[in-house]
Image (cartoon, rainbow, N blue to C red; front, side, top):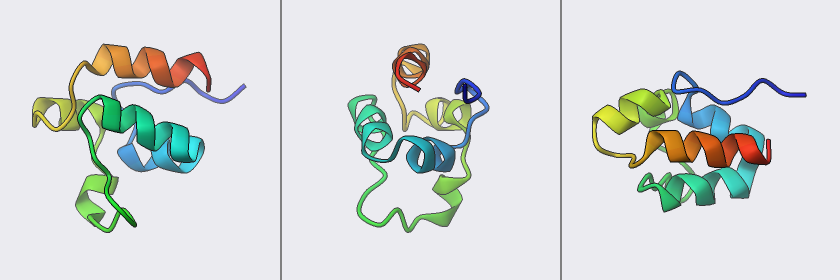
Length: 70
């Protein structure tokens, strides 16, 4: 079983591990990775950092969603 996602997980790892499901979950919580995900700094941002910067809503809800099917 893969390690669960935490607030310290990187945005990049969500997208790499869950591909479209990860992108859609991030988008539902306000984080748009865009096409090609070319913003290198954002790729390595933690979910907690994204939430603090108000790029991501409901971090706890996102983690529940990501870990429910991971």
